[in-house]
Image (tube, rainbow, N blue to C red; front, side, top):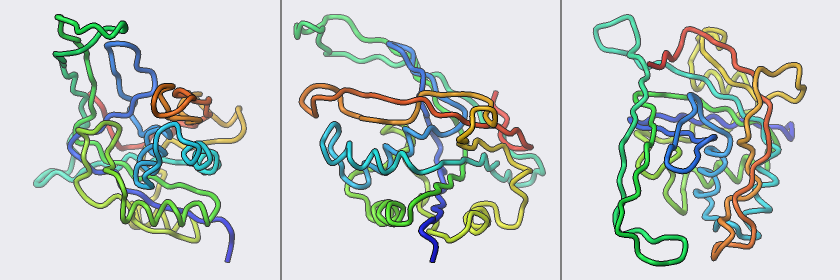
Length: 235
């Protein structure tokens, strides 16, 4: 049996939010799942404390996995056209906060948080079989809660869809006998010329530099290739 395996995940939920360039009060979302979001989901399922030695060691192993995503349109009853994926901008206020000095603030913190509505994605993780077997075990019986980018984005159905010996088997689990060329995909590439964009979503540490560990949140750049298909139209 090959040392390489393929894990298929289905991300189906009413809300999803995949931040990769959020700053201060504006929390945007990417149009496809980020690797940091998927790795964070797996780390939560494994029960790894943020910034811990165990987390950093596991992140090094998860970083070796190659990730691809497939935008899978929903079926609309009574229509041949899938419902469009839309972006929701949530005007969010938080009271009873503290300033950097620790003094309670009398003012509300205002943020704009974006979400994807009616999005549905298939994820294929490719890599070392032992690493993927551990991830598969955790996703089937998670220690901590799992969500799609933010705690309010709860899965609508089971995420884990199987551990396979070939990429084609993983694709079949997610899109049946349809051709992957008919879907919008984002694939991780190794050669710069093969990619269409570079994003900083390869997690090195999820720690916040405080009580959860001495190392703060750190990310490396990952090269990806976007191939448009007939899938997800975002408005």
